[in-house]
Amino acid sequence: MTLKFSSKEIHFLKTDSDDSSISPPETYFSDMLLDKPVQIQAFEKRLLKSATHTDRFLCAVIKISADLSDTLAEKAKGTVEATFASFLDHDRGIWESLSDTAFTLAFWDYTNEKKAFETLVSIKEKIQASLKADILMGVAQFPFHTFSKVDTFANALKAIDHAAFFGPDTLTRFDGVSLNISADRLYQNNLCELAIKEYQTGLEIRPNDINLINSLGVCYGVMGELDKALEQFKKAMEINPNEIMVIYNMGLLSKINMDTDKAIVYLRKAHGISSQVFEVELLLAHLLASRHKTDQALVHLKTAEQINPRSGLVFRMKGDIYLEKNQPEKAARAFNSAIKLHPSDAVSLSGYAKSLALQGKNLKIALTFAKNSVDLEPDNKTFKNRLNFIQTKIEETAPPEQTTKTA
Image (cartoon, rainbow, N blue to C red; front, side, top):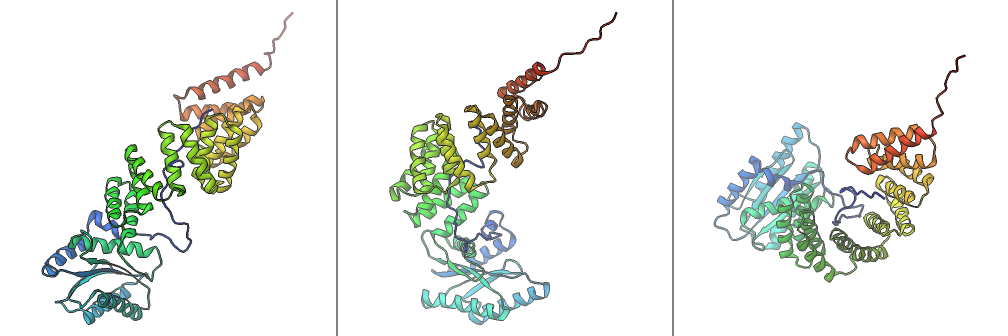
């Protein structure tokens, strides 16, 4: 049986919210920290110069949540400038335009933190009333943890990304969750080393945050640092031994380390907690099939199919199992479903060809699929053997050549 996984379908699990009221932003302000456009650089320089002699300040990033015409964009800029001026004079704060709809500000010389946040809320409400648009705001304060003054501006950019998850009219303060979101974004962009640093910083603030710990383990895992990944997953399990994503990750790590029996134990535990996690059902089916427990594997594949009926891998695995069970008709149906979803799946093309040949029907169609699989993976010996098998079967079933008798 040929079980071939796609890295897109079997991977370490990270936390993704299933809450329909929470959705990620279309664009991330924190992305600006990677290439640092002139607006970011300009505000950093002004902040360092203006806040040199202050030991505390608040920094905010504001976005007007509306698509503005050129005329309205000018009005928005004027409204923001006037609003800032009405609350903050030049000795108490600075601001900068980041785009037509986004702005940043920093201010100091306030009585206490509560009054400072009340000022920010008032600024938000006044801009919102003037423009009749929702206002998104992320806020960071200095001092906080070990962050520098420039870091505080970066934190405000991360805080507004955090706020965006909760809708266009939200104000959110920077915290460990903001760092989790920022690190997840770096992870999505394949910047794992930067993501690791961000997760680690988040854990300095929230040392027992299971999402941060698990995500750090995932980063180590995809980078191939399996011992470090295992350390983090174990730490997460000590905090919550029933966290399904962590249990799955432990199972996957065991599978990678060739300890199939331990992997099955972990995945069965995960399945016992919830049978609605696609990756759990798929990987458990794969491991059971590798132990020739095909009937059990088929049960989990049926569940995986119900969760994700668009997964070609589920049907491919079912086809492989039915071939092993010498049920070519069922195998053909499964492989055919896989090919409809992924026409260039060489494994399913070859499996479909073999299942047709075993039934002794549609041999010319089987030959075409077998040839296609070899074209896609010319070094695959199994595919070549199946092609030869079908060619031989065609030759054996061909009618004898007609000969003409002459007197």
